[in-house]
Amino acid sequence: MRPELRLPIEQLRAYRDRYDYKADPKLDHIRKAAHHQRYLTQSQLHEVALWKSKRRAALVKENEEAFVREVTAFAFSAAYEQSRIGALVLLSGVQYPTASVILHFCLDETYPILDFRAIWSLGLKQPSVYSAEYWIEYTELCRTLAATHGLSVRELDMALWQYSREHQSEA
Image 1 (tube, rainbow, N blue to C red):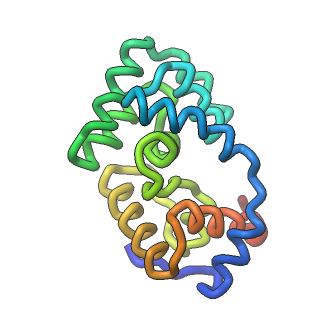
Image 2: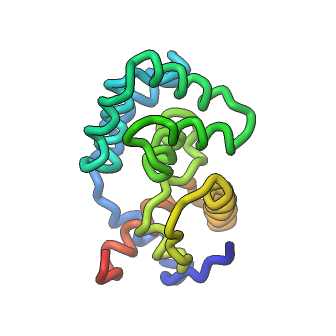
């Protein structure tokens, strides 16, 4: 996976600063609960899913409470990345982009948020189907890029998202 950034590297901070999505703080209470509980409840999962995709969030309610707790507890404690992401996508209404939000806000902020806008800004080809392998490569790419430029992974996400919002006509 070799990015060809569409935005000049020196403008990452400027795009990050223009990011104006007010929902991030709304998930702080879920972050705290997940760190304390070491799992998510169905209602917490639904709130995270709403943040990522209102269209898919309703499907989360199809999951039984015990199943949500079991799957998220396993994902949060798994040693292997394939296990973490793979477990989460077993949940109804959770695909790789939503799973990435769960990992980012509920487990470790060094996980990027998988989003077509960020993928476009990185100059990567949008995959027709996400896979664990793609996710792992994408995560490593974002962590490396963020560290190289003195940003958190979330700040990188914000810059990439904002750049796409301002420049990607088909978004």
